[in-house]
Length: 182
Image (spheres, rainbow, N blue to C red):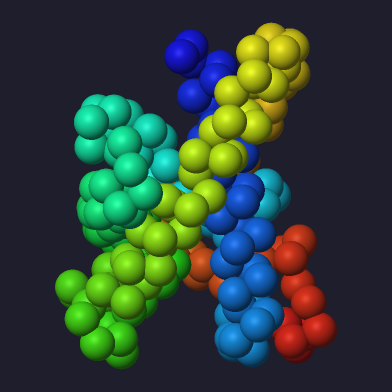
């Protein structure tokens, strides 16, 4: 798998994560509905990084539904913990906090959500990869370069913004819904 396919997987799964977070927030009537980690792009990178880590697992650990659920869920949870730690240490922000959920580890991860993500990963990832794998090589290199440029600029601006303000809610600039109105 070449670098451009890794980038596209990261972006696609980060976008799916954004959609999933937004749908979950709407379904649960969460106070914080605008769920993303960038100023402009609708992405939740923890999902993209988690899926890339799961895809990097040896095939013998992901052969069956339950193996993928167990090892994939464990891997995605480890990535979630590491990303939360990094956001806290490097940027001084928290995008999620599970400290009120039973079975949490320092508020960074929790057993109930890890179990849900494990089953969701095992159920959806093989089908998503079967659909994506033949399509990714057909994406023009120019499109990849342009999106990489936009992503890099957005990442740099977002990180600087978060380091200065420590305000994750301000990232909702372009995702305000009726519940987010002042």
